[in-house]
Image (cartoon, rainbow, N blue to C red; front, side):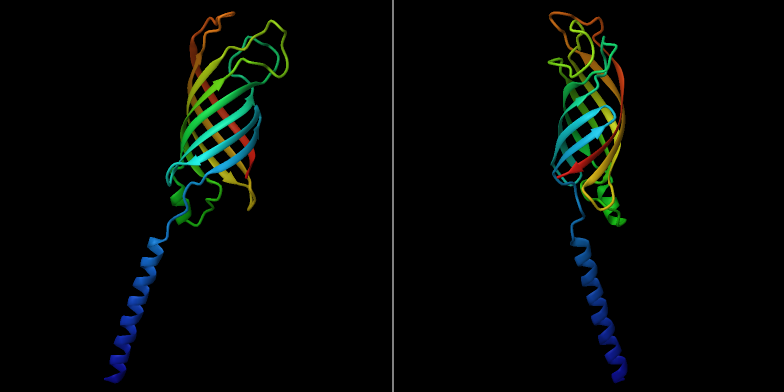
Length: 193
């Protein structure tokens, strides 16, 4: 009888301990989006960005860079400055954490709507003096992935989107079109600070 009583007490203590351990695991927060500073280079430009954490899965990314322009009347290659603002939804960051996959530096899939302003202030190379680049704003819904390379601060990002370009009026040389559909495909390699 004493052995049965000792067994019941031990079993009760063990069940209570395992329940407590499970509760403590459940209450531990899963990794979430964090604020980051990035430098990235791609096939068509270079970028500096800051992602500000808004919530567990959302970040607001602001970016400045030099990129090949989407529309031009210039036959030679050139780069123009651009500014981008995009709210990013890292929709599977918590799922990746539960599956013991890396989420460091916001390594997850994301969906976004990027709003990019391409300026006509200057062009870096190519073209004649009378060529001009129209000012434009791109509204681009995109889907992408972001991953770390190894266990370093290096990362890569791949995204694809289809959206709309709106050409802004230029007082000296107005554009013929006011807008058109455009595609955005980017592959970038970067470093996170």
